[in-house]
Length: 409
Image (tube, rainbow, N blue to C red):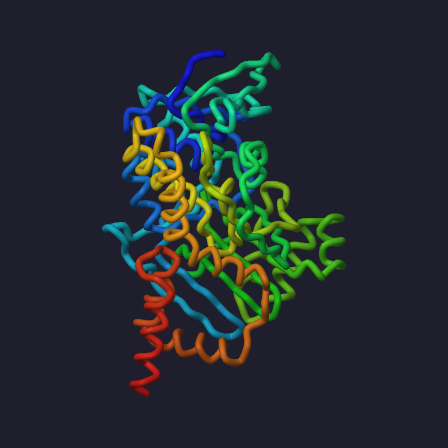
């Protein structure tokens, strides 16, 4: 067997590279592997809020990310039927701006930062095929390198940061704790000459059982997504035959009394339309004997929450802090596992359930419509509503604010 490491991380995108950076700085000897070569795009909403900006600045990559010329975004607009909830995202840790940065830029910059750590070794074009056990404990991985030659590496901990289809999660047979199937499909494209209203903003429109999401991103492009019920078989058939025309018609026809159709008219699709028709919201056990999961490998929620990048980075930080706390105490594996599981559930579970609810695609009820109108007419409630997305407050803060407003009426 080849060199022994403290930690082997499979998957070198956001979660994996971030974890490697944190662990490298903490003095761990890390092997970071990925079957891809970078830069390489991936299916992702790639949007994050200013609380994530603070984390990216902490690990030393935010200045490089700003060089990609993604527009800073401070304004967010949600429109539910005819009610708009619009405002400026609350400031977090001195950060005001949010971003939507293409994964070709984000992943590459994080990976380069990981490579710069003295204790981190990066191996691209390495496909993990199995984990190695000693009794009931994972002690390494085996796989094929770029020359299709078998290699083995050992470590005290193997971490799966390899996304929704995690091979590590499958190999260690992690327990599935929650699974809720989404009732929607998502298709999106990158468009040039799609202009914003007044200032760049994140925009979300939900009318009946359809949703449109608009994010300004790098290279003067907009990410434009259409979200629709899976029961709409006719639409799905049209998307497969002519994705661009179908996406344009979907966005133009289903969102009247918005500016989407007008803005889309002269916009040009610059890359093929991409999408996903079936996905689950899920939560797995995060750690066992000799292994751990981070990012989408451990939990995934509806992309409409725009929390995936944050969860990957924050989850890596949580895991790194716990591993640093117990460094050299391998006899504490059960306690480490329990502490990690509790930490990620405390951090992400509330918004996970929000994502599950979004993916059920229920139409807005009369009661919810009344609540939305109440929020939209009170700046304090708008701030609390938007603050859920960047963790400046929890959902119960919005509930308390609404209760206060209703008592004052």
